[in-house]
Image 1 (cartoon, rainbow over the protein chains, first blue to last red):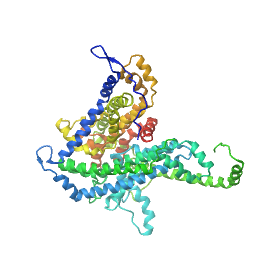
Image 2: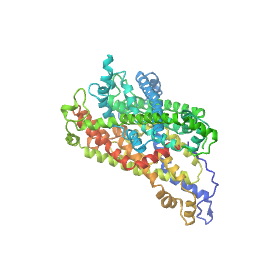
Image 3: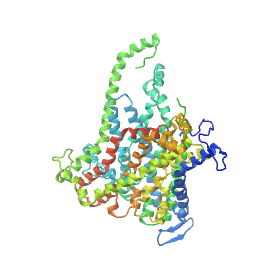
Length: 319
Length: 296
């Protein structure tokens, strides 16, 4: 993460006079300006982050639709979360999504970045080709993929069908089958690997060529150069991305709602979709809040695990 | 290759390997270009399929097996969305939300980023750690309580819940701006100080103008994310005329189950603004991603 310490000495930039005419300590004046200019964040943090998070804990203790009914139920919802089979289903689906998309997307993004970094011609053109899918997202992309996955006349099966049918295998029915619906959302997520690719590409460019030259003189093969020089120097970037992608992937929602509505048979019910259904469709806002906290704790655990693992694989020596 | 001083033995060894390695190099290049081109095709095909579908005649689009090239180009499918729903209004609504959010986010996060980068005050470093921590905070924890807050404020059915929270310096953009301000040389501060600038003047006259590229990054990221957003408009927007493009597309899908061309045409129109934005501001996109991802 970014360095937040400064080696600058305490040296007040701005001096001012107090009302009684004595000069105000420059540092005091600077501090007031500091709080003033930071206030948009401070206010936003209290009103839109800390406040809601605490409120969420409390709302989770009520049975409420925010209109007609508000009954205190204590920890009932929090206990329900652990027993509810739908929550469990949503949790498993989201976990499978996250644990497949994050590693595969990371590897895919790295692979593309390394390929494009081999002094390839028209590099910026290829970079755009790979990056563009991650610029577009949301409903339009979900509609597009729904069409690509169409089992009978969709693009995917029109390619897969002729390959698989000679072997007596029918191509999957993708988002319409319980086994393939979740993998469909996962495969679709690979299309967005370009975002991370762009970051890795920039990271690769930042590696000094002198290191490669040194490795070459030492007789390191290109394979070894990648694993001994490139990969270790890229680990801080990879780490930062993996953490962000864990959080983003646990919040998968739009595809699941637009493409499958969580179906068939809850095969693509994700945590955020379930929270949305519970709160904004069925108006159990208390239960939705409890589920949101449950999800928050789970994501937090995985983020902490990732942060803890950092010391064993992230190479922090700056060159 | 490297122009390094080599020992005689190494030069000789390299000369022996040279003939062999040239063949290896060639095979390697062929495989590399093959992989790049193949992967590029795979990544581009969905876009092609979208465009191909949008201009196909109805008799052709539902054929089995599917055909790759339209037998004739029918552009009128691009008019259908506008005929069925007020799509022009949806574009206007999305633009309003995106612009309102982006301007507020850019101004607030740059002011806050400046104070974190340049001014010294107690708890500053702790506050910045909190900024970093909120960056990795899952959004959905705030979903229900902020909804309750906006119910209390009577903001449901307006665009305020979608725009105004972004005026309070979103953490990611604060981080981005602060990283940018850290790169501006301190000597500039000193000369401004001698000219009698206070911190606000220093920000407004020196740092703000210098940070226009970073502000561009914030604006582009915010516009793209607001344009693509689905969950929040779904929760807060009421009434079809107030819909964003994302909501309109979903509504349109429900009515167009047998008109794939019109649906794909609408989807193309829906993603077009972000793609155009990307092509015009590619440099900023790349720069922003680099600042946020590599230096992070």
